[in-house]
Image (tube, rainbow, N blue to C red; front, side):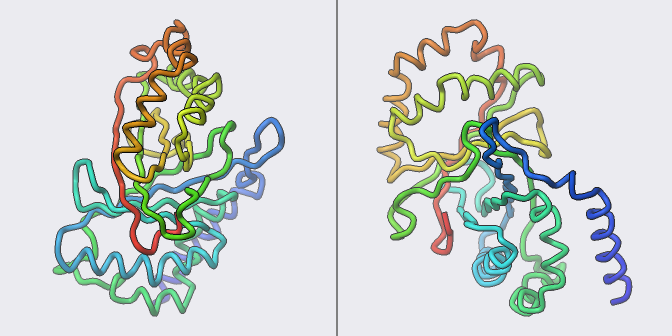
Length: 266
């Protein structure tokens, strides 16, 4: 017990020793703070493990994160993509400090620990999940805040598309981000997408890359929106620009389809 308290206090001291300046929110040119996002994946096995993790996230984790000011929290099951079952979580915060110290605060939240006991103390012979991965992103300057789909409040039907673009170099990555700010955002808007977030990966595997999430009522709407996007004259103009030549700035695309859990706040 003393060792756990020592580790917790040491980690907290190290985090806060970085200074308040380190954790100040980045702002757009207009002064609007840009959000930070943690994109988390719980890789699961079919069976009791899935229920244990879902109960933990819905009953313990999300309420505790909300108490820390991390809200709304998105929770999604991987529907189309590799490595199913996988549970994805999207944690937004205007303060970087809130995200990077969240686990330290959870370890001191008695209400959370009581509800999370079966998950946190799952034995090695019956673990709560196979592995957990996490990435840290910052919102694009042109889309500094997360947007919840308009049907979420009424638990309306919706699916989510999570797209990640890897670039062959840092310079190519910068140009791809620039492409969004040079007309691509407007193309998405004209095509009628429900954008959730656009994030530049700060800490993640396979850098440099960016990730964004879109939402739709169903797969049919998704296909219709992308058809409209591809036919947009401004999009064609962008892709014909030598500066934004796709093959030069994007080396790999990962495209996943996610379904919201019953307890997702997005």
